Image (tube, rainbow, N blue to C red; front, side, top):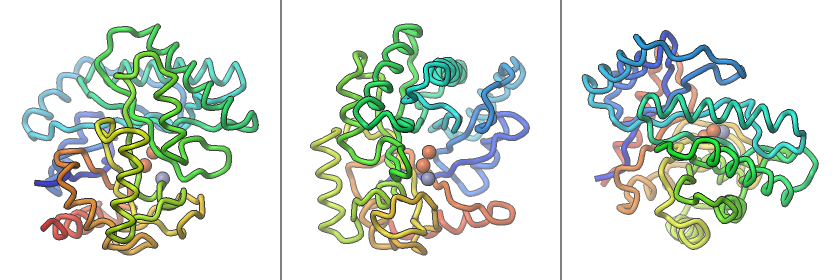
Length: 283
Ligand code: FE
Ligand code: FE
Ligand code: ZN
């Protein structure tokens, strides 16, 4: 018993197409974008595509699905116009997940772009409270992703994510996604058994393990505490194999979607290779 392994897979041609891509490497979980991640606008999901999505989901048996939102969204922005636009786009992302009965939407907390960490975090809290007020009945949960702490991005420490959860009124609607590359780049050293145990203890004390709903499995091209976000193949980067062995054998994480976001190579073959590496580590 271990994590539900998978990867971020392409939804090009329609969100229903993602399942066949996941099946190729026997993925138990997938992550997708439901719209272009580099654009604000999205055309509404067609009824045909929605039907096909549910059919493919059932046929493939891949029932653990996570969506990642657009990279343009910045719920922390001090600029009113950008923040309002971000809130609207985020509501659209949540609504698309709800339409597809997808339980989890991963988002980066955002960047304060100069207004400071405290104000930035407060902006995220206010944005989420607004979203929750405007869309009171959604089942989909927001998963705040841990970040590498590049530039003015928020979410580089567990404390920052906890501060957001604390400020949100509907706390049950906010969960967390842990990205292994990002926490390492942010300074969490979990390469040894003790280091891994300590990192997890901190996560549990500060955020609470019950809030951990997805994991991004990436090694890091850059060293510890570099604050630089570049993913590497499992075991080939600065994090190395041992850390991943602890993670995949941690019984507390059983069944959590654990998704590669590494370079896929030709025909996605490197996803296959990374999944073989990870599954091979399970004791
Ligand atoms: Fe991300
Ligand atoms: Fe990630
Ligand atoms: Zn990253």
